[in-house]
Image 1 (tube, rainbow, N blue to C red):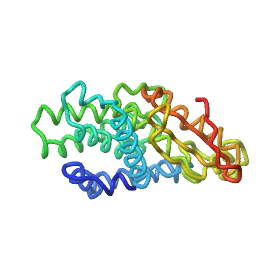
Image 2: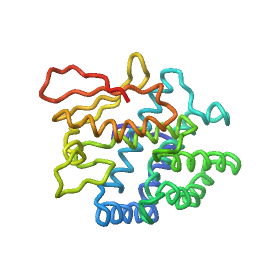
Image 3: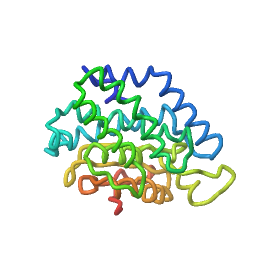
Length: 253
């Protein structure tokens, strides 16, 4: 969680508020009860929130370092810190709607987050800027689901980061624990996921597999997130089987 540990200034203060909020923690706890216990999904609680927030910030920073300005900077004359905070909050709260139901959870997350986010932002910004950032955060939350195109760089980072949390035991799809099918085999095949600065494209995602069945998970989970992220042109995905020579092969998504 290097990116979260290295937060400074307002971003760090806001992250601490997210972490300590009884309301947010309860929503995340109930999200896991609904998603894990009742539906058979893997973690959608606080650990997932932290992983996605950390990875979304990392992707945002790589893009910015490669000359790709976040949307809030371009459209609303915000600072990079503003965009980082939008990305962080959107990522941290994107799944709280699972506490109500998995179906249209992105919509549930949006309206649950609205007042929480507004009350946080109004402590740090004037009203107009707070409401501008609020709408951008709600957009990131709402558009993290497949089938809804992300229209900002910040939202795209959240969507892609959501898909990167797929190491074994952390699949974004429900796994039948008593089944032995392509979903369960593939989900158990993802050993590690690394996010790095790339060469041809700014962001390079490297996935280490225990066997080639993991390709299915990459295509069905991460691939779908990238497809709808709006930042597909900036992302490349490479994979290699752990026991093979240390050469990554690019995955076509």
